[in-house]
Length: 474
Image (cartoon, rainbow, N blue to C red; front, side):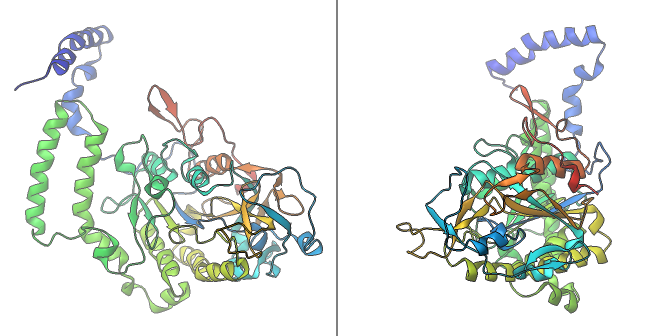
């Protein structure tokens, strides 16, 4: 066998040092590390969280584009009193020029025993408000989609970092070895920042999210290359066995290589998925009354698919509300927000009811969040932006709302508050890092100790920030 100069030096010069160190330490494992490399466990094998945590899996309903908090889960009656007037406000920068107060066009009503007020456009979701914790004091870093999307998904607005779903599958593995542990569904194509939203970053590639375009119902359009038309399953198995043997031999000569291990596991997973993927997307096996409870349309369908996925052991499912920024209502907010909420409101309520029916609500953590909120004041006409309309809201990262349910969350609770107009978080401010720290706590992880060593330092989802928001926890 021919080896290059670098590999020869690694095996000889560095190798003698390693042998000496092994002798000094009496560490037989160091001498046999290459032999053991072939015995690497599947990195997606289910693992137990290091700390007690009620949540075992996550569904993230992503309202990308920026849902308006003052029109949904954070009522501001002062906007009605000040309609059309310039509001007193601190020097809070927005992305575009804004004007006077714009009251919500929707009515708010108290729901449940908790009496939490919710907008009429989420009337079905509001029926479960006693199971929901609304955080009204969220804030992020900038009023731009791209960095805010990455911050919400990866904890970092600029640099390449692993997404939340990748961290979770790294920490807990997956309970179904025939499906990806982390799935991201977005109908119609990728959202802004594309696959960076579900990237594995510096984690091994096996923890990367798997994208599915749920605008399709045909399995072969949902999952590319799911079937091999030219080779039978037994023949594919023989090919994979040979490929695995070659890869293991390649890996043995180079110690443990996480990228090669991820590649081996991806081949194996792709083969196993040919059976289970078809079953999980086949909604014809669901009772008609269950399908009807979710309502019509793509958004409702993918919420039902999300429930079927976690029911089968998928660890993290992200449900995007379409490509682009559908909730980005710079104009025609009254029409667009009502339409968008109508596409998911019934489905969200059905999802919560369904999880309760299956006994899965208590250990499934649901997050409903976009990347930021919207201004309580109207956006002024901008050339090429809102066609001269003055009936929408600009981006607002200073204060917005998200909600959590299930998985150890204290339902019927409101955490924090924005100021009287809804401009900025004012009481018990919760940054995105705090949200991530809290979610990890609910899943059984200390966000300060849950790390991965890369490039000489220990990285974590929350970087050097974050606190657990105790008011969220039951």
